[in-house]
Length: 179
Image (cartoon, rainbow, N blue to C red; front, side):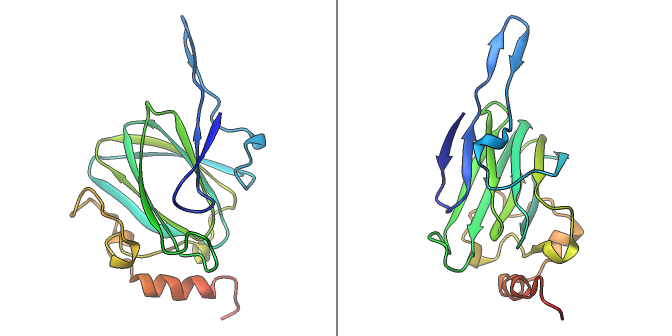
């Protein structure tokens, strides 16, 4: 397994090593020794229809680790961690089922998922779901500087009614505080 850095500090792409023989293929998708920065406690399987966009979301506490099993995912990333070397940077990473890559996303990095075709992906998290740590903004907020491949994607009600980037930033500063 090779580890590649991205434009976003702390986000790594792991190039997985498929082992093929006459029976098929075996690929390790995660090892604790790969130093993703967290311990995985829950795995989720997601299927998405074509032209769907999930997000943009950010977490103050939990890490995400994901890979595409089939189809195509365009991963949008934006760093708004104060003090990060890549604060304010954005990147779109295309991932496919054939590419055999996984991605580790640390807390404070906004992420959204666009699916140009029917896609299945697997992801892990370092913390159980906490609605107070599940923040988001509209996928098309200009501050994200993400040039998504679709100007009118299929969105969930939650993502369609998401607030502004400024609202997300304000809420992020309140996570973990007594209000």
